[in-house]
Image 1: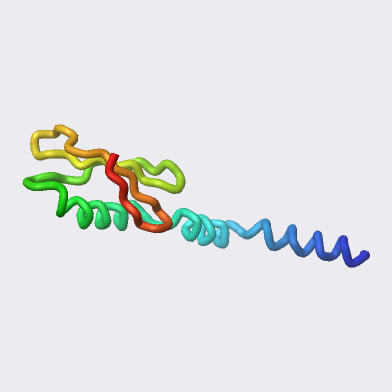
Image 2: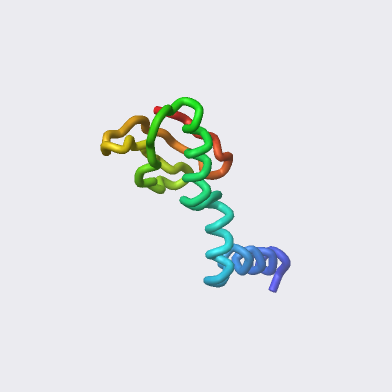
Length: 92
């Protein structure tokens, strides 16, 4: 086999990880889990939000989590996004 074909074969092996390696790569690329996102939202929402609130359902949209801050009566107080790789929170 010539060197070019050997290099291509090597790269193909490295780019097709086994199932357990795929899960590890996916975890790194996804950034954070929903638990961490909830903690970040609670920390960031303490300052602008007064009163009783909870973090609503988080929607995983790839690189971001879309979330809602919900009042005790069920109304949405604020919508926000959390960047899964940097942890930055933006209120919408």
